[in-house]
Image (tube, rainbow, N blue to C red; front, side, top):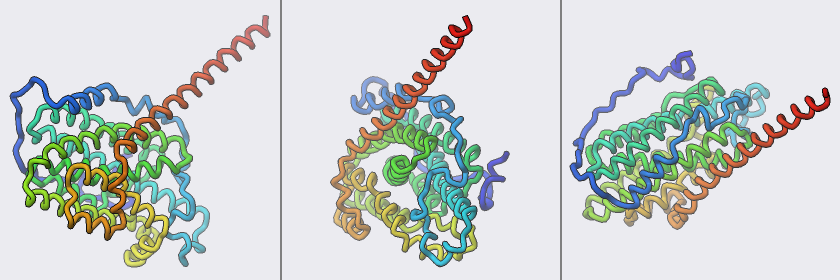
Length: 369
């Protein structure tokens, strides 16, 4: 079935052209490079995996409860509309929210793939080009996986959120080579990582847990790459150049906090945009969710050297300033460990099952002698 037929709303033209600006940069220095970045490149090669094989796609998913979302997490819960919903309606609401979330993940991963390709083209250092090439492959795999989950398990997609599309467009149109790093690696990917982690750690459903754990294992490397490259570069910039980038971060953070709320879902249930925005704003669960979305962004922004007074004031206003003290390295190592532990548990259980099947076969054969 065509993806177009699964969208809740016509997304318009199937191709979104974004004019490219800036220079493609070649490097004729093929020997050496930053050891840390080359080590990350080696890890990127070593950790490639096949989404068709590593993930157990045979696991059944209830499209009306794909993530095990509790009632309290739905913005309509506690409103005058909630009592009017049948159990079927509530299941459909869960389906729509899951489709909206994973659709934004899907569109974001395609954006990350394009940004990684842009970085390969525009970054001046060959070691960064090497690593970005592995990241482009990672992001292609992620887009493949999220697309498959939406097509086969939920059967519904949402178009890209207008604000996410705007931020992605601004990131890609900027001619400065570091902006795809900053817009995608730090802001959009940082936001996605926090959302992935919250769902991974709260869902009791095995398939989305697998998908998110394995994707986050890759993203831990991507964030490390962005931090390393930008930290080195931003040490060389003037105060005025740093302020320009801080303004970009501030605008992007407010945009994501205020506009990525899934209002489109409630509109599909016949609720006006004004009322949908009010419900999303008043939801205690969503307020906590929006705050936690910055748990990966704030410490990364501080780490790369964007920590001017205006940016700090913005984070104080958002109530996320203290997240700047989070241990980002610890968070990333935990993402790696969770994925590896999930592999060990899954494959140990499969091995036990195979051993039991062999033993049962032998026992049946012996009994017949």
